[in-house]
Length: 121
Image (cartoon, rainbow, N blue to C red; front, side, top):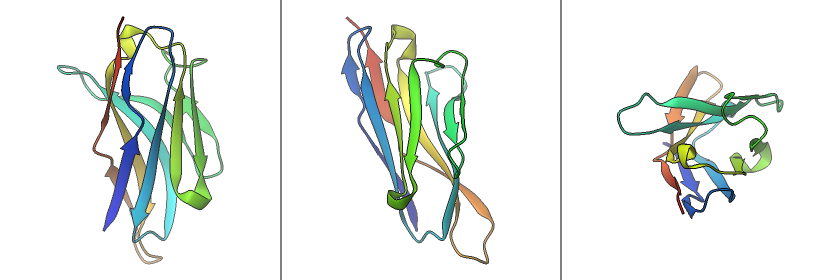
């Protein structure tokens, strides 16, 4: 069994900052791409940022320059630093990882349970 456990969401004023964390645990042989998506009711889940195992990153245009994704492979953990937050960043943020459970398995996509980020004065 593999789990992704997120933490760090909350309520913040416009212009504020938050740091999200997502730790993978369980029967894991290797973790490949990890990333963050977000979802607002009535809209499709959208990519926020991703990181490959070697540290290459990709960001949505709407967050580039404000959000920073990083990962600690030794801890199987990914982080998202959210700066200069705006009300339109309000969403449930989901952690995502492509994981190989054994050397004989292919990649499986796992999702965290989601953490709420609310930006409001």
